Length: 256
Image 1 (tube, one colour):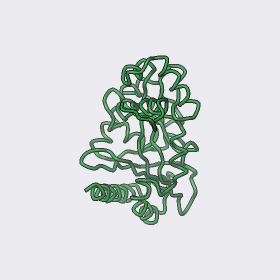
Image 2 (tube, helix red, strand yellow):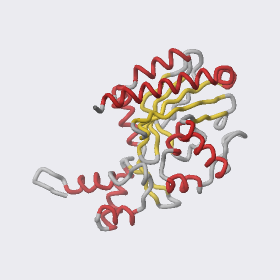
Image 3 (cartoon, one colour):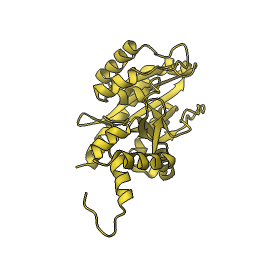
Image 4 (cartoon, helix red, strand yellow):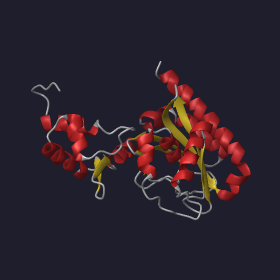
């Protein structure tokens, strides 16, 4: 890596470490980071601990694996709806909220986290569904948006997630790895994913992928109380998929 008098070596190395975390490599340990960056293990350990202290990395004390940390959520939240996709796709998200009168959200993946870039509360009832941290992780397999992002992940990432114990939040939580694998396969094939009281009784959700040239750029979801969801399931699904398609076209045009 080229350096000059205006660069700070430790900062460059820290950024080099952060760049190693991708959708295909959401979790890495010190040895893997050392091998990928060419930095000495001791240097990687010191930098990773610093990034962890500042919230840019998180450490799983059991597996000793690092992943991107909650500081990213704070950055996205502080930038608000004017940040990136939140700004570009905000109009479509608002139209969806107005058309359905339900809670909607726009999520984008970074590493093993799905950050909520934009969230609009229900016009008829406030469900308080936006995560306090501003993101979901791949371990939240009950979440419709997480299901989509996981379904479009590499086989190795999916295997690693399914190998971990799944917390049962309700009697409807899918905790069997084989059943969940079938759900993920179906979600990718049908380009739609559901959450049917898997996290909280009385709450359901549906999410659709925003695909640009086959690549999953983000997800858009709709959340409603079970009674309304069951009555309007097909209408919600249609509105959501039309919104996702419209968002995909808009993103495609932005990149031409």
